[in-house]
Structure formats: C-alpha cells, structure tokens
Image (cartoon, rainbow, N blue to C red):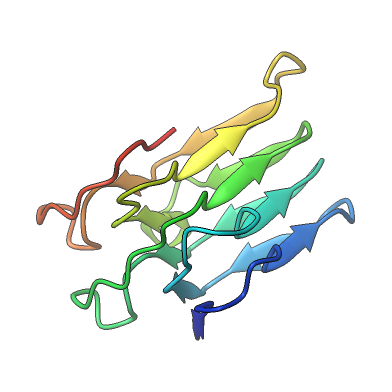
Length: 130
C-alpha cells in the first residue's frame, strides 16, 4: 500500500492506543512543513514499512520531515525477521526517527535500513537517521 502524503501537514498516524501496529506501507512525498509522519506512543510496533521509496524498491519519493517520533516506552521499530525491517531512505532534510525522551528506556530499534534502498546495497541518503 502506498500512501502519498504530499500536502498533508498533520500526523499521518497518531498511534496513541496501546498495542497499535503500523505495518506494510510505503509512505512517500511528505513536504517540509508539518508534524512527524508517525507519532508513536507507548507499546506501538512499526514494522515492514518503507519511507521515502515506492513499493517497486527503486523510485525515490523523499520525505522532507521527520518520519517517526517516539514518545513512550515499549515501542518497537523493526524486528528480527527481514520482513519486519523498515526502510528509511531519502530523508534529505529531516530525521528518520526522533525521540522526545528516551530516558524511560524500553524502546527497540532493530534490523532496519537507513540511507539504503530495500536491496540493502544501493545508497539513498538521509540527512540524519536517528
């Protein structure tokens, strides 16, 4: 599923319900103005998504604002299986993952690709990854 967020300035997903899962999306085309694409609160899982690249794995559609903001504990971004991997590519003027406070701990960012296409080899730069 591709979600083109051009022109949308609010959060695409505001995952505030405990146990929320965001999975299997290609999120592309976000302009520089606006809130993070995903605001992840406690016990949210974000897995198997592609940010800044279309489902063909080749076509770049950069996101110019923060991809995910972590605002709670028990958040999982990625996972141990290849299918759980998120791809963060083409964040040319924003941060792929940001946090308001990691002091509470219990946040897992695992097995994701930053600044690469889904092939894991071809570069597609990010300004800042985490």
